[in-house]
Length: 597
Image 1 (cartoon, one colour):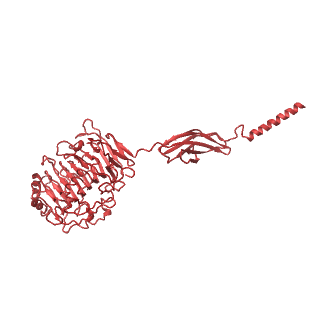
Image 2 (cartoon, rainbow, N blue to C red):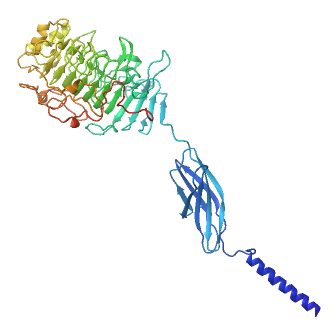
Image 3 (cartoon, one colour):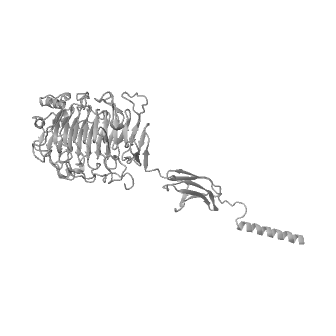
């Protein structure tokens, strides 16, 4: 009997222990999930993806993921599915820890943790320290810093077969800013960009023939803050091509900018469209200088359109031979000639706004063939059309831009020039509005006076308006004696019957002589053409691919019924130069090159 009582007691104790075990969750699994395993974190930019292996449990568990980081509020994804969860917009340089929780109606279980680090943000500035020898793109989310002379490609010679040739294309996205490094070590050549023969620059803000917006324009500028920029902060842009020059089969560019020239007049060096080049140039010696844009034997396969050169030390734009054409050009505050051209240039430049500043300026246009061999071939038979050239001589103009003598001659044809200048306005220059200089150039002028029309034996200046050059207002005192051509002879050429030139007030608004800014540019648009004005018929100019080359992109000289860069009566807001050009003397209206600068 006693033995039976002991067995019964043991049974009761066993049942009690079993009940106690069930009450405290101790014992065999009752269906709660297992902990998620194999938790992993992968980082992509500022995003983290968390993955894991499924848990066991009945019913099937759901998952939530918690992401934590020091100093930040925890992030939780309570709807995680498919064994993955993504967190975006995380902080550069931060370390994040992820933990996955599996839950069902029977309970929950936490995984171990996994960590990942979001990398530091890429630098806003990217220093360019070496030549570009393969196809490269500069994106608009960065500021690209030229730290020294940078060459796109290695020179491929006159025929593309030179030893060591490396062809490359540099593409610059719309809205990109490129700065030239200033304050380089003493004796180090300033930073600039050179496109070598055989290579290309594609800096195309719009992809079509229209003015760019302020955000689209591609800007080459100083690395100094806005309001502190000045001429010569960096070197400028040089393009070397394989079209012909009359300086020989090839020539050496100024400023150690490489060789140019060849026999391929249709050479293609890329696209420069919707581009602004500011505060550039390098005056090493009087014969070793860098322009804002030097076009050295650049061919007619190249597109250049909607371009501004602002506050350059030496010339604004200068073609050295070549056949490239430029349209819609703004040159402001240039330290020497606004537009120069020499060595057998045979393209056209149409629609030009040139505004000089009296602190430092020379000629509006200086148009030459060759200074050493004035009859060198090919000859400079280029066409300039629809320019509004505004000098800054205080003796003849008023307004902010006038301060001292400034501005010499509006248009100077010299050194055997055979240029043709049509339908333009020239005003505000201290010495003369128009001048023919040097014996070979005089021969070309006299040939035209005698009725000759062949570009290679003449020069032309027709359908143009002069006013307030040399002395304020008046209809007679816009000329001076130049070397080989007297004041009377210059005036007689200008007044030749059939040339349709006028000494008349072009009716420029007073704003044309102000500094202006991007938000409020100077107004260089007359209300109407001067009474009695007759334009030169540009439609009759032959693009014969000899004296004048047709651009391969289909652009051509546009026939106009007015003088100057913009049709009279055009609203300033609709003018082709409004909204993307800058005008201040120190870059205060330019694009910042870093936050706040």
